[in-house]
Figure 1 (cartoon, rainbow, N blue to C red):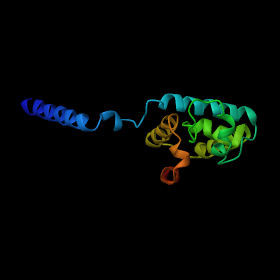
Figure 2 (tube, rainbow, N blue to C red; figure 1 turned 90 degrees about the horizontal axis):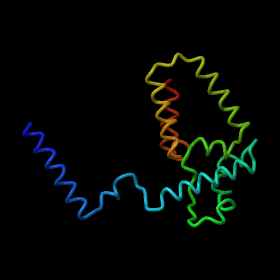
Figure 3 (cartoon, rainbow, N blue to C red; figure 1 turned 90 degrees about the vertical axis):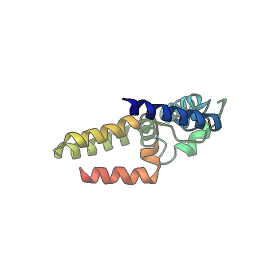
Figure 4 (cartoon, rainbow, N blue to C red; figure 1 turned 135 degrees about the horizontal axis):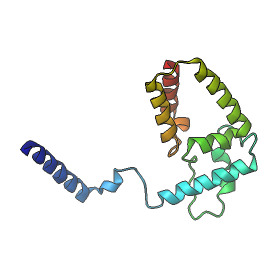
Length: 152
């Protein structure tokens, strides 16, 4: 019990010293003051892009190319992909592309006998994909998801 209190005290003291020299908000989450506004504006731009070409999308990899056309009146311009993999996919390949990929993935998953650990991994990818685009835009994450899907 005493050892636990000492450890908690040391952790608190360390965090206080770190926070004095380097604010903890710089280390936690990476959000800036306008992070919520920027992400919301990217979501709105993605929805506008989807409305402009709902069936076939704007083309794979073209979200950023078309983004300036849909962020003309924003208070902050942020050249980033939308931070939601589902909006990003729908924007780039449209409803027909999404249905095609869904059909392929659905057929593939139906043939597999999925264990709970694979369902958990795919769930983590899906849930974390609601808040960031890295599963589709960063090479390391694309390699990782390829390896995970290959192991299933």
